[in-house]
Amino acid sequence: MNFARRPASIRHRLWGLILTCVLLAALILAAAFSLLARYNSLYKDLLYNVSTASEFNQDFKASIDLKMYYYVIESQYSQGLPLEEVHAAQQLAGDLLSTTTEKDSRMAISSVLSLCQNLEEKICQLRDTDSYDARQSQLENNIYVLTSLIQEYMYNYLYYEAVRLNVLQSQISRRLVADFLLIAAVTGMLVLFFTWRAIHLGRSITDPITQLCVRAAGIDSGDLVEREPIQSEEYEIRTLSESFEQMVGRLNRQIRETTRNQESLRRAELALIQAQVNPHFLYNTMDTIIWLIEAEKTQEAVEMVSSLSSFFRHSLSRGQDVITLREEEEHVRSYLQIQQARYKDIMRYTINISPELEEAVIPKLTLQPLVENALYHGIKLKRGMGRIYVIGRSEGEDILLQVTDDGVGMPPERLAELSRAMEQGERVGFGLSTVHERVCLFFGAPYGLSISSKPGVGTTISVRIPKHFEKEAAAP
Image 1 (tube, rainbow, N blue to C red):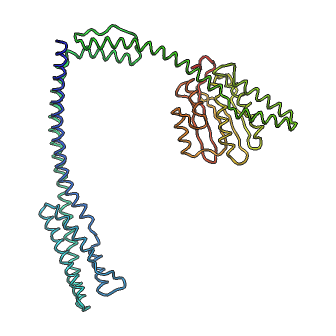
Image 2: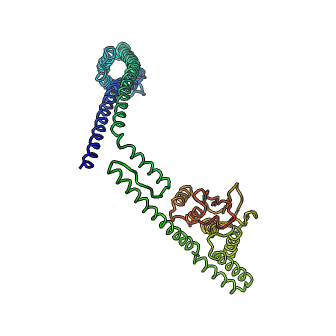
Image 3: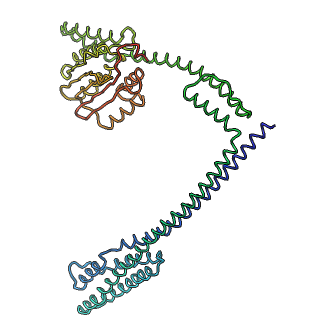
């Protein structure tokens, strides 16, 4: 019963401490937000008035005067009476008056509103006047004078509000600094108080929990050796530690078993991938050989059979997962010789791999899928003769292999899609994901494939591998 009540009491006290802390923090935040909302409301209203007044047509006087002049002289440019502009000015002045609180500003904008109403009356009065001389007199003595006064009072209003905005901004800045310093001081005191309370309250249970956290960190770092459970007076912590060690033991055994299974599965998957041969390639090659024999091109048929034999011999490679770069080069050369016999009108190739790299090891069937991709998705889709370049050179501690074609290339969106699919291991594209995955499986994540391509220019697929000259070192 003691073990049952004691944790509950600690839990309740912790919850009480947390709730009190949250409540006080909420009150502090509410006070801060209230201050911000109050200052923001004052600033927002004033800023609205200034921005709205700024929208007032600065050419109001010139526009009204010109339109009224054209109207009076009955010019061909006359657009009628500018009553809509006067109404718009009245509406703007009314909106500003409803949000303005300062005396000088209200007087200025009230004057604008009254003058706009008077201007409307004078425009209507001019409209009802028939005499040209009377109209000219009204235009000069009424219209011009009123538009000048409207513009002057609107400038005065904008000046008063801008001055008040500047003053209010300075006041708000000073008040905000003072208020937030006070809030920060109170918050700091509360943080210190609650920190002291939390340390005092949790002292009896923090030590074993700290030991348990250290043990968890060790397990996270790979320490899966079973150890003695942590000795604690708390039944819950002791039980948790015992269960923890039991879990570590089971996890350790499961990891060893899973590792063995995954290694077997990876080797099986790799063997299956490497054993795959494109049946269409075999069918087409055999058809070509039959055609050459029927055409009595015996020597060419013999060369193709020899190339096909070399191709399959290197494909099998005595069941090995990795071969030398020289063997991979011979495999690719056999493949290209066969394909050139079929596509001699559209394909040429060049293989240039540095002799010093011949004994470097590489996963079997790395370059051949890339060459096949260059032929079928680059050269064949191009009109006219195309070339495939297979290049291998040393770059520091790495080997860079490149398969380049001057075929149709790829648009940027397709290149991005293919690169993304390759990095995510999706089976999208032209088999490049499989090659990339195999290279990463053998040598690690820093190595693998990269693609660059331009529409109408061609595509380059680069394979970066480390300089390994022992097949055992490259085994997964």
